[in-house]
Image 1 (tube, rainbow, N blue to C red):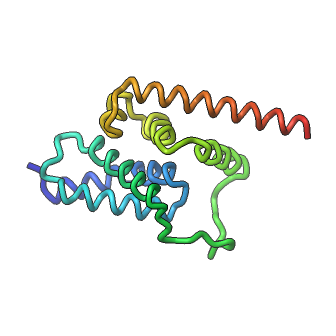
Image 2: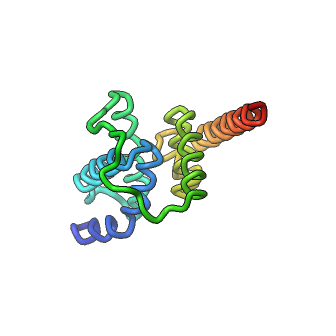
Image 3: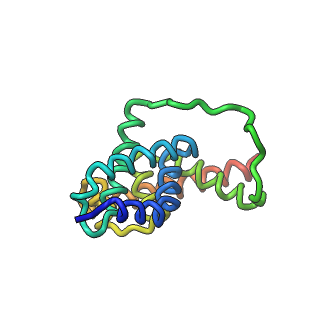
Length: 165
């Protein structure tokens, strides 16, 4: 049986990784923080029923909550043009590659985006992703294949356009 101390340890150990996953799903830090807080609140409510490895359960809550927000087109916060304080500590090259990844993820449908984020950024296997998304491992592999093919085509198209210009 799990208790409050187990949950607190889990949150301390995994919150950074879960927050990065939430950000990659919704592409906004404020929304990602809200998404993670909501997912952890839901996980807390079921914590005693969660097995020895809570990651698949929590990732599934994260993905399902994001999907329900996306379906409802939840817009709790609105982005502003001017940030209240400047970002510090990122190099220009790193920002460029991060932006390229964000833009690439934006072109994918939500399920393909979830598969790519969970596979390549959360380092989960096909079976774990399938459990989180409620589908088969074959579906995970086909969604990943389609997403990667789409990213390759989009990348090639962008490169061709930049060479022509």
